Length: 164
Length: 266
Image (cartoon, chains in turn yellow, orange):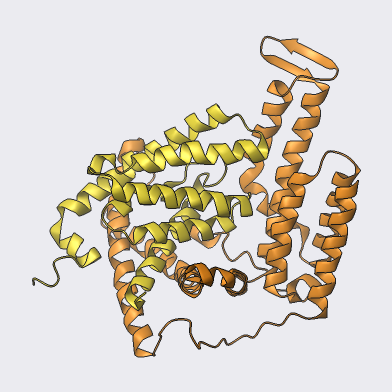
């Protein structure tokens, strides 16, 4: 793994942690009734594969400070990892937010149900709505904006650098 | 932004206590096991002993109780939600106190409500005991040591811990950067926190894009700096702080094992 790759993955993780923390003070970032703004980053694997390990790591660290602790650390970040990989594989940009919505709604509710006996279906619906709002309202517009703006895209992901 | 100053990361409270001085590995392993143990316990005497054990740990950590109570703040709602769900809609069984449509209050339901909501509180306490007494850097190093066996299945353990450390190191930097960007956009006439959800979402764009640009610029600089200083992966790398597993850790782990045996046999 090159230093550049390492640094970029770490920065993705850092951005995720920072956004989770900023908004955890304002809104609810943890628990089933959550509205984690930083989740909009889950659309990024669509344009940059390094975001997959980056988000996994960010979620891993951010969840260390989640009340559910270890449970969230392990299962929550695994959900993010799976969702990240699936987003990377999505064929169309407007489908990029779907994996995080589906994986988190089904997965997170499952372990909340197993560990806290919380109603499964209710959580599926709630998490799906909150994820859909965050990814489609915030994530997708940002993704489309970056994807269409060649200058920013080159600056961020270094694509086309060799041709210049 | 006041919220930035009160961010909960680095909850670490330095003090000189038995728990603070323990090797991070022993605390990581024991807190992980305590959470598994918590889910194995039933609502009986063992649950009470577990509760007393947590009180004891809080006491020997020499950290003011107010920090533990503060760490419960993000889950007030979750605790109440869990309690209500089990109290009114929980399992039916035992004496029935009240029944109306799908609402029902039963003996079993009340027990489950208390059990599940206190379990959540205990969970937070165990996690807080770890994060309040261990600095994030120690946590990252401890985790690297524990995960070392994963090297055999080609999981990049050193890189994982290195990235975790870098990510944590950049949290304050990026928080400051975000604050600067928000102020810069405000001085150009941006208004945050107003309008409906869609309008608010749109306003995040002029924060996120500059944040990404500056963060990735920093990532590039960092990679260059690392290479300039001869970073070449985990092999042969030494640490500034040496960790040591000694009598204290053995004592602590033995106590946890003994406690678990007693609790599980009850």
